[in-house]
Image (cartoon, rainbow, N blue to C red; front, side, top):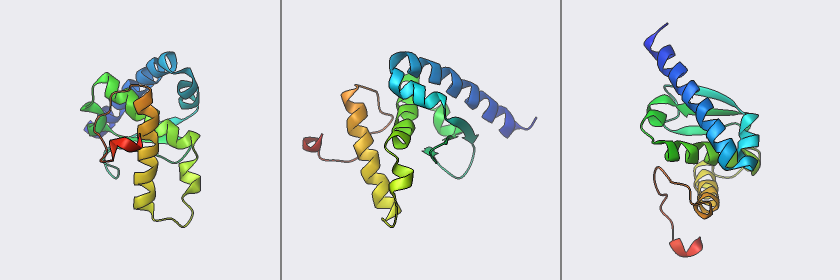
Length: 127
């Protein structure tokens, strides 16, 4: 087994354990997350992303987060699925659309008092 394979295996196990924690804390999001496949990655995406059926997670990024931040990231990607962001892009500017959808999810998770790994720049008056 290569070093990359070992890192991916560790990340996958951590994601699966974190999914169970999120299921207990936030059953709605947790139940949706149960139906998504996890794909640990070491290149391509620097953080995390989803295509609606899979959550792609950068192993190095995930390893740097504490438990609360990891739960935030999993919930964040799940909300992209709930809100069908991947299907609503249409002919919009992908970069601007991603920022807007990330902020939409930021406001949702902020109300849940979840710990963010980083704060997106925005006007606090909007939330």
